[in-house]
Each structure stands twice: as structure tokens, then as C-alpha cells.
Image 1 (cartoon, one colour):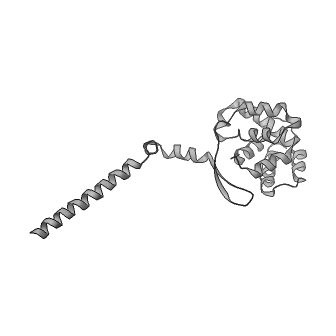
Image 2: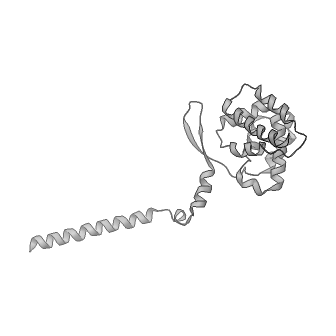
Length: 187
């Protein structure tokens, strides 16, 4: 009889322990994540990128959404286009994000300035994109290069200028591919 009572007590203790652990697991779940849809989580993940530093080590970078679609950075670069510094170029490049697609004012303005800075200072643009230690959205920038808004842009001349540069080949080829799409569309 003592053995049965001991076994029963032991079983009750084990069940209590198991159920209390399950409750603690549930308490540790972040309630905001429980309510977030998969779409919202995926949007947040798009705002992060993996970049390599000079040693080849990969780092996850959270993109700062305060830059997205921000015309102030576009204006600063446009004003200094002839003697733009790397900080202004980087800040401008950080403004590109897929979330800007519905912002017509930003879209047109940034497109014009993108082609202008790529024409005036292509090496710096490609070097900054190549370094990409701050989460520049290269895909969105390349999409914009495929569709220039200004008809007066000499795409052939710009393409030739970029071909002649000694810069990161991967980024250079992405930009050249985008410019080729633009050339095929408009010439």
C-alpha cells in the first residue's frame, strides 16, 4: 500500500512539474509576435540584410526605415551633386525601399537624382553599394535603373562610363544589367 501511495504521489508531482513547465513556456512567448501575421514578420525581415565585411564575415544589418522615401536626403544630394561626399551619397542610397513604390513624388525625384549621381560619380556610388555595411537595398536601386524617368539621359554613355570603371565586378554587373534593360526598353 505504501508503494502505491508513493507511486501515486510521484506521478502527481511529475505531472505537476510537466504542466508547470508548459505554462512557463507559454508565458515566455512574446505576445506581440503571437499576434503578428506572417506577412508582417516577412516585412520586418525584408528590412534586414546580410552583408559581408572586408574579412568576408557575414553580419545581419537592420535597415533604418527613417531613411525610406525621405526626400530630404534626395534634396541634399541634388544640391551637392557636383561635389557630393560619400556620406551624402550613402544617405541618398539608403532612401530606396520597396515601400516607396506608392510615393510618386519621391519616385520621380529620386530616379532623376539616382541617374545624375551615377553619371557624375559612378565610382563612389558603386563603392558604397559594394561596401553595403548599412543595408542599402540594391535590388530596388537596380529596378529604378531599369526605368529612367528622364528621356534626356544618355544611357549608352552612362553604360560605357561604368564599363570602364575598376570597381566591384558583382555590383558593376548588376548595374550594367539594369541599364541594359533600360536601353532595350527605350532605344
